[in-house]
Image (tube, rainbow over all chains, first blue to last red):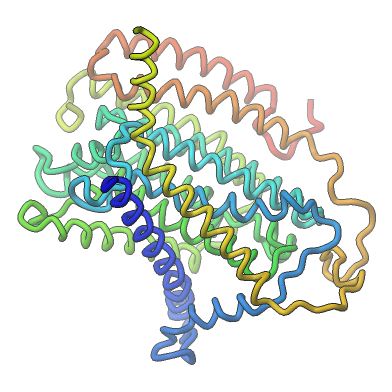
Length: 336
Length: 137
């Protein structure tokens, strides 16, 4: 069973890398936002505050894990697991580098569909967390979150359809290949240039899906305290935190794969390991953009948010799919 | 014979998902481990009084239960989502096979999208997409 061993090793490495990135992403976010707000940010734990994630983790481990009396116990404990697992398993189909070595489920040819399906599962965790907490803030936040996430999933789904149209394949490896090397040469083959509308829709939907600012209404402190996490403490809270950040990384990785040419870059054919570096750089740029937006944009109102999802994103994304199909059928250069 | 080959095909298709299953097992295990860590290392205080285990409502004593009737807006959104999400799923195989289908596929999808549009316009005019104006009309 060498194949099984290889898969297990690869998935262990993947989970390890994701957890480390999650820990340091939380530090990077605090540091970067601090700089944008003319502060220094955490700088006490280790040099430049580099041990801050370790300190945070240890603190959470040694906190008392309170289970409030009114909660629905099985659901209450299941919910954080249901939030973390979908974010982690999204990476199974994402090619993080050139060749099957850098893609876990490299034989899976329905990658794009898998991505949409797994994204859908994450809603359950949030809704169940809110409902099982049996707390008014949490119930309201859970409802808001589920309505928001499913509304924007439609736009994201249609944006991915446009990408699938361009690549003529549901496999993420093929989608990357369709952007590289490309007869148009260099970065002009990237779908962000050939599918700008889909890319824009994907970005907006990505913010709503990850419930990050400016769409972080479920965690609007002024009205809902901590939203659906209100009744969660200690490591249960840490799981939600982990879920949010890993999902941010996953969505950035998906944006990179769908629109930024994935792992492609100069000299990847000579040195395949370089492809992982390119992929990482692109993902980090997306993540920094995530954080930058949080520091710059105010939160939107809930009715505006829902109106945006149903009245703007949905029709535009459907029209974009049809327009793309028309251009492909006509054989327009760039869409052949 | 027919049955055997279809079973074989099913197994082969499932084999592609083996890495996904392993990753699911690993990440579920990790999540459960994190939950367990909290129980193992967290302080276990004997004194658990009713106030501490009360739902958090910014220090107010909760009145009534939280799990009660919900605004119908949320159900409406859920139903609309199911409808439109099924449409999205229909688009996927079409998109993957579009280059092979050509104009025939395009015409078919145009009819499908037109039907979708009729429903969508009807929903909009009915006010199903308005979040605020529930009691209008």
